[in-house]
Amino acid sequence: MTDTKFRPRRSCLYMPASNKRALEKAKTLPADTIIFDLEDAVAPDAKEEARENACAALRSGEYGNRELVVRLNGMDTPWFAADLKQACESRADAVLVPKILDADEIIRISDLMADRNANLDTKLWAMIEMPQAIMNLGAIAALGAQKRLTSFVMGFNDLAKEMRAEHDRANFGSIMTQTVIAARAYGLNIIDSVYNDFNDPDGLEAECLEAKKLGFDGKSLIHPAQIETANRVFAPQPEALAEAEAIIAAFKDPINAGKGVIVVNGKMTELLHFKQAKQLVATSEAIGSLAK
Ligand code: COA
Ligand code: MG
Image (cartoon, rainbow, N blue to C red):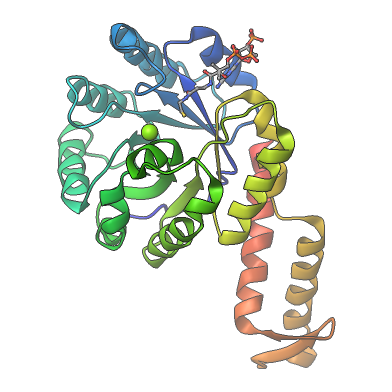
């Protein structure tokens, strides 16, 4: 069940749903997606209150056209069932389920969501942060064609811990590529992991650039100071847009009618590039319309 309409997800900002000040601030922040966290950023004693805050925020109608996602507690916790039920009833755009292991879990959650919210409005996003999920990527992603699953979100803090690896980006390059391929094979969106050092804009920018090159849609963020960088890097760049517009104009030129391959700015340009160019312009327009 892939999203039918494209929407930008350059910047996906987590916030502990127990932090009312952050929830309030998010109403004015230019993040494409807000993720109200009920899981690791919330202490056990604050779980119920955080869930209530998140649901009140979902129902408030005060977040403009930001996409609103709730990260639930894991399926094996005492909070999961109520988290899922209430997030669906409060019409979250999506629920993000942590520590997914395999395709069976996606089926179970989708079935529970069908009970809670028969209208299919609330989508399912899966955290890819467990070694088992990496082993099962293809089978999990394949459910994107028929279940509510629409997005993967990388979680390298947990994955490094589970792998007993150092949290060094070099350890995750092949996993990022593998996960992009699995996601794209079934039309899923894919969001990169967080950058923990929120006082280091250069390090954040380097990770955004790397992820964008690999095909990611955007980056998970933890602090408002990170939003501008992600929004800038994951948006189509002016040079790329100018090139796309030249390709579109060339294919629309009657002189090229019926041709499958032409030369634009000295480069071989095929119909697939025409399609890509139109997609880039549509992405840019979608970003523009978010600001309205
Ligand atoms: N979302 C929205 N607002 C946030 C925010 C966030 N993730 N992080 C900080 N802010 C707000 C603060 O509330 C503060 O607002 P104010 O100006 O109204 O007082 C302002 O931004 C400045 O915050 P700052 O003092 O720089 O940060 P901090 O020391 O209070 O918090 C963190 C630092 C890391 C604890 C905090 O950014 C945070 O909780 N991030 C998200 C963590 C999370 O959700 N993790 C789960 C996924 S890995
Ligand atoms: Mg995690």
